[in-house]
Image (cartoon, rainbow, N blue to C red; front, side, top):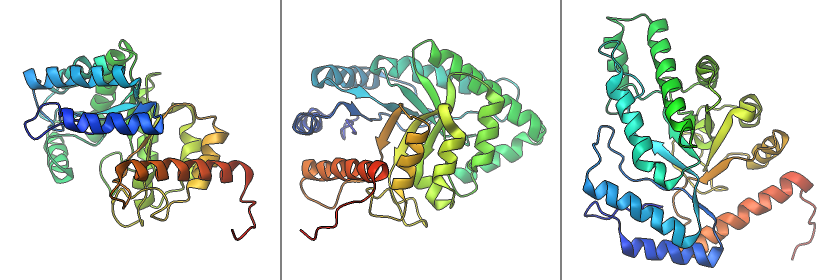
Length: 293
């Protein structure tokens, strides 16, 4: 749910629409975001609007599953990491009142901008550090992030990206989390991203095990990050659900797809929920219905 209006303030009209959806479908958990700028400094509209999102959650009796950290995890121009650590603390301080269960992080965000800028930052850092030293600094930054988030009851979940980005491969991500070795730092498994990289979803879930803190559920055809509704792509969600049951997954999950191809938003969300419930039943009991009607 995106509460941000064109004037950069909380949009009450959009909030009213969301409230109607929540009540009609008896929704208990939501995912939201606020400012996606990597290096933003919270101003009065940010603080006021985040408080209004908190009030919205209280009024509608919903819990925020997760929030994204839109900032760098590494400062490439020296040992001083106070700038990116300051942004980590800023995110926790601003969003903690929403009581998100998880803060999701893209672990390859080594600088401002997109993947090409991250690679430039990494190459600049190689003039000062070895690859092992860069990795260790990132590990230490995540331990710091894990510490300050733990104080507020928020877990840190590192998300798998795709396409050769830093720490996008599952084995690289697993090594990073293992090296961080912090009880409050684990994984966010994005099933759509995994499909692009042709990974084994079920096996990845088993590897992540009890360090799997958050799921991003959406679909695609394996060629682009299209964030289709579940069932509109090629991901085998029955195998995913079976693997989640094997590890007794009890943490948060987020529908991270664009709207169903229906004009009625509520009907689209209802369809998405019912399809997921049907997939859960098939995963647990098999497909037993042999009737045509």
